[in-house]
Amino acid sequence: MKKNLLLLIASIMLFSCQVDKKKEAKIDPKKPNIIFIYLDDLGYGDVSAYGATELQTPNIDKLANGGVRFTNGYASSATCTPSRYAILTGVYPWKNENAKILPGTAPLIIDTAQITVPKMLRSNGYKTAIIGKWHLGLGTGVVDWNERVSPGPNEVGFDHAYIMAATQDRVPTVYIENGNVDGLDKNDPIYVDYAKNYEGQPTGKENPELCTMKWHHGHNNTIVNGIPRIGYMKGGEAAKWSDVDMADHFLAKAQEYIKNNKDETFFLNYTMQQPHVPRTPHPRFVGKSGMGPRGDVIVEADWCIGEFIKTLEEAGILENTLIFLSSDNGPVLNDGYYDDAVEKLGDHKPTGPLRGGKYSLFEAGTRVPFITYWKGTIEPKESDALVCQMDLLASLAKLVGDEVNTTDSEELLDVFLGKSDKGRESLVIEATTRTALRKGDWIMIPPYKGWPVIKQVNIETGNAKKYQLYNLKEDISQTNNVAETNPEKLQELIKEFEAIRGDASKGVEKVVLH
Image 1 (spheres, rainbow, N blue to C red):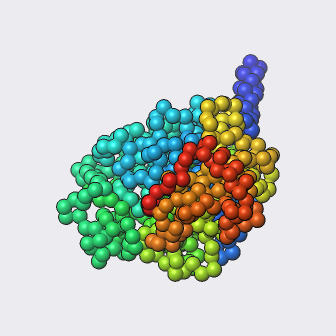
Image 2 (image 1 turned 60 degrees about the vertical axis):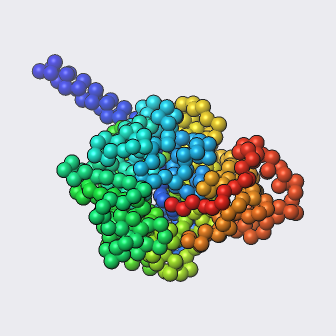
Image 3 (image 1 turned 120 degrees about the vertical axis):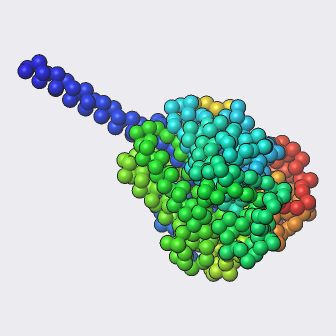
């Protein structure tokens, strides 16, 4: 009996030690869980923590007010695919000619041999996942959607991937899990084409009576769920997504991942689709903002973020989770559909005090909400340090004790953790192949040919015949071009820009939308 009692005591002590070690692992400050919450087309002025008064985002505000709220945080680009390329690879997207807005049939634009955030973290013991929008291409250019599609997220570092291939307004309108279309009936195969329609398939252009959402420009091909899309698709009826349930669907997948991996060290890229078009809020959120569908899906996204954070709290891992929240580019109102985004805007300013928007070289194209949050580790503060999403690769490598060989991603870990305000010295920003230089308080935009205003979306591109120079500290709205009165500063920035970018001022004839 005495021997059995001693064995029992030893077993209890061993179990206690294991529990203690498990607890210690969960609060290991060297390797926290890492989450990117990445929104789509959310503007600097769309968040109440960034000054919005007509639209409230309490759950995003909770992260902003409990962490570091960056006022000079940038996406690399004013459109989606390039920014998504940069945040995962740490490379300027203009260095890859394929890093531009992609159709749903585009091949993967990240080289499978390339270093990426998930690859780097996986090599340091992290489980890795992406849930939500992808839009970085799939396969090699000729895709059979009825078989496993590869290469894709799994081949560039993600252990688990539950995605839509491109955007909500593009075909194929299906979810893809680790390369396979979710819910596909092989007896009803999927066919996708961006050049020509399939016989007998109605389109938004030819069959407007079948549309529940009216297209404005560019979105007049295959109709799915009453919404005309970009591109043509046939078949796959059982696998097609429900637009109004998309936010809930991705949220549930993200929550499931947290619950299943709460005892692991993980990296999750939670890439939300809001407020990109088509804006399809769940009926629970219709009318909640008073601004039409665009405002409603922002309210919906904020709710999703609140529920997601609750899941981290309930799993007991919020205090060991480093969260980054940002947007892939700036805002746009009418981006292809009539959805009252313009008519019901009221006094709300999606760009805040900034000029421009999505597709633009002006500030509102790339300066976006940018928040870092780590409960109990990051002290709340506002920071005006210049930072870019591209810097996350080098910074997270420092966090986990790794090194990466990159010339574009800068190591700014202490800045992201709120311990320093010394950010980048300079940054090249991009808008549909056009580039400009931000340095210190200044931004220089070279002369470019093409539209000064994109009439379809009513956004200034930043194109002009002469060089533009703005002091953003004194003139955040970029109302006063001081290039002629500051020739020395202009020449300094031109010289640095050309050393990085080369002679890129020849420009383009027009700005590509979508």
